Image 1: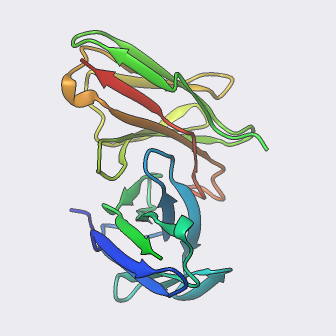
Image 2 (image 1 turned 90 degrees about the vertical axis):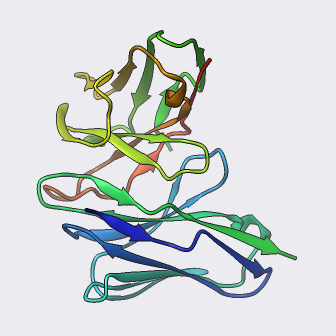
Image 3 (image 1 turned 90 degrees about the horizontal axis):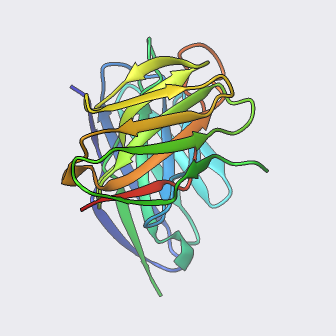
Length: 111
Length: 116
């Protein structure tokens, strides 16, 4: 079966740094996505990792270790608008285009 | 820039009725995905189309069907609706960078279906 684990909820302070972890055990792996989703809205793309290492994009960075089945999303200089759910999704590859989604991590930012 | 368009945004139906959701992908995107998201749950993949042909099937009930038309828009048809079908239905499109690669998904704003 396919399994993606993320913490259910995290709380952080405005201006601080937070790391959201994602571990996966899937039948295939082509890449890993991070999406941000505000309540009642569509997910929006944050990052896509294919190779091991850190990808930096402004205040957000994403890390991947394929051998460990592990990724994290790092958010710096947190702002109130960063309060959202962060979804980790694995691209299975092979013969399908399916993404396997984690349950999402609800991030609460406090002043 | 053009985004993924879904209609209707809100739909209220009664049990056992039929509903149809429409999705208009970003121009030149070759792949369309349908997702169902219940309250507080992660998006569940239903079905996808690549170049107007069904490319993959997820947890789509037999009561549901979907197709992609010659103009690349897609429709999700849901029959014999049940209370549990109440959810947000997202359509997403992508331009596959290579065969068997998903590429970045661009999501529509979703269609909220309420079954009474």
